[in-house]
Image 1 (spheres, one colour):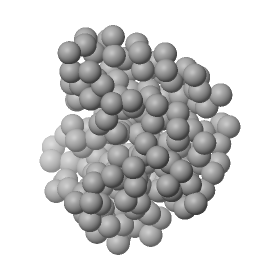
Image 2 (spheres, rainbow, N blue to C red):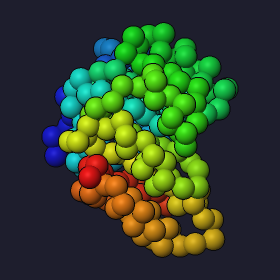
Image 3 (cartoon, one colour):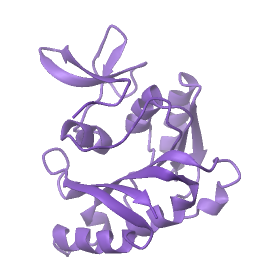
Image 4 (cartoon, rainbow, N blue to C red):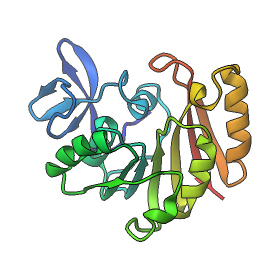
Length: 209
């Protein structure tokens, strides 16, 4: 699988790693301006390592839900165009603001991803990508509510955490329910377990209906 424009594989500390060009954010190794995209700390990085066809292209306009302190969304902003980063908790949002100082295309929003109406006046419509990594119950519902921002040919890149949905159910049962709910507003293009890097997580690539 070819990597998105702006993402490369380079030898860092003696082994081949995914990298993007930008200032380090979370203590990741950096060589000649290229910073390691650590798949063990990033579900989207894990998708790329595992060969998931994300459809990411250089310059894409992105809405990122669950940005936390900026680990993954900083790599997205290194590669993509305008990147709106939604985070609910004030403490990681403060860190996210620091990350955005070095990235003019990264726009942090202290908002609740379950309530897209609270940031609809800020986030443009017709976006290329909706990236979601929100550890809450109802992850499929969040993706459906935020579908309004995607272009007709846009893509959802969703990382589903089974334990956030139901700590007692088998992960595969949780993932089946998530797929069923998502199908109310999306066509699923690919799903892949991320257990090699993130236990009990499922990657979903989908297109809005």
